Image 1: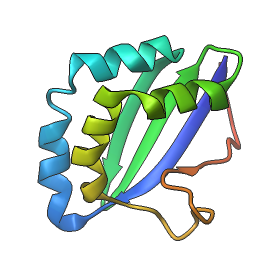
Image 2 (image 1 turned 45 degrees about the vertical axis):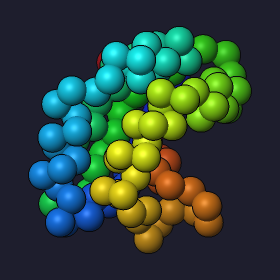
Image 3 (image 1 turned 30 degrees about the vertical axis):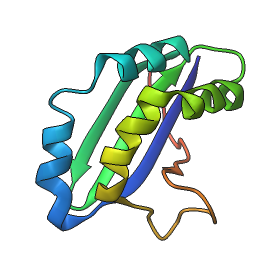
Image 4 (image 1 turned 120 degrees about the horizontal axis):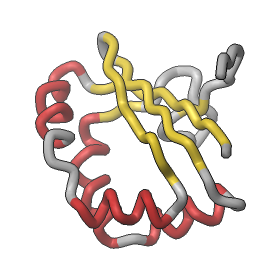
Length: 107
């Protein structure tokens, strides 16, 4: 299992919209996440930053993310959520959600 933590900004004028969207994530989007071996997925808000955490239980995260990216339901969901988001300064060129380094783990 691989732990993935990511961060992105939420536009201050879109915080309420972002919260509202996530009150009812479409079931096809959730099914696609599960099909791509993603579990224990959560998003947290602090100020204008969103922190996401999920556990990946597959063998090829890059391939599974490509499958997810091609999914029409996921694309429709992202058309709703992306206007609420803005990459953080620390994001690599072309990176939307910036990956975070794990510096501690207690199991």
